[in-house]
Every structure is written in structure tokens, then in C-alpha cells.
Length: 154
Image 1 (cartoon, rainbow, N blue to C red):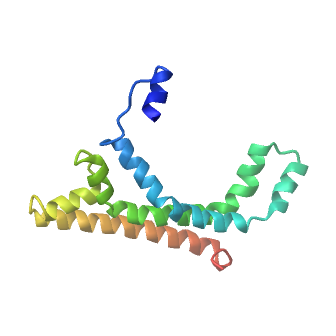
Image 2 (image 1 turned 180 degrees about the horizontal axis):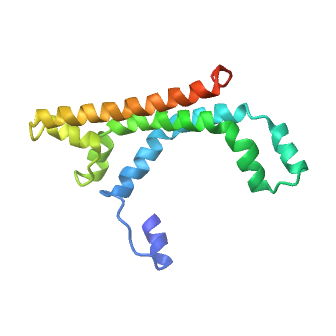
Image 3 (image 1 turned 90 degrees about the horizontal axis):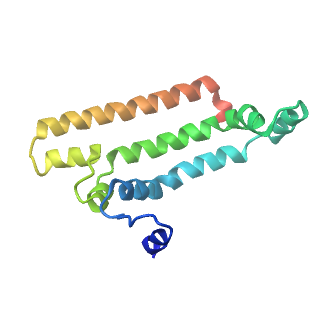
């Protein structure tokens, strides 16, 4: 149906399966709630009087948003990014199913090392590297939250 509509406008037929776009689309669809919920919680606590003050002082809408609203949502944005980053690093089923083995993510590579190729040393090295990368992200998150103080966490 969508391909017929695109062909009517002169855009060629697109294949969704198997492709990198299908993997990307399914990954975004899967992990979007992990990002939206912390951002929503952060936006819910925004002090809208700062936005009104920025407008009163002559700021245009984009500038007022960048300087009054966005800095207040940084904790939610960063928490959502970490909550998406951690499970997305280990995902391999989505790429196997929708990429048909053509799309390789680090989770797929680790799974292949322990399954098909039986190179356990390389699989373990990749796992430790991935775990270090995730721990670094968590350390940066804790460090940034520590600098902001406990009032942002409550």
C-alpha cells in the first residue's frame, strides 16, 4: 500500500525487510518509551515562570526555549539517554530478525562469537569492552547528577 502510494509520486519501490532502516525503525519503536518517560517527568517539573520571564525580557521563542526550558530538562534527557543506551547496546534479536544477518550490531557480534564461531576469548573481550562502556556512561550520569545536587533527584 505504501509502496504503491510512493510509486504514484514517482518515488521507487522501497524494501523495508531486510534492511538497516527496518532495524533502526524497530529499535526506535522498542526503546522510545524508555526515553519518553524520564523526559516527560522532567518536563512536568519545569518552572514555566522562567519562560514567561524570558519572553518579558524580549527573548524570541527559540532563544527562550534554549535558555529557560531546555536546561531544566537536562536531567530527564540524560537519564532517558542512559536508559535507552544500556539495553540498546545488548540487543541482537531485532537485528537478527529484521536485518536477516546483514546488519551487525555489537550484541550480534558477541552472540556470534559465543555461538557460531566459538571464539570465546574474543566474545569475552567484546563483552568486557561493552560492560566498560556502559559503566562509563553510568559513571558520567552519576557524576553529572552529583554536581547538580540532590534536589534534582527528588
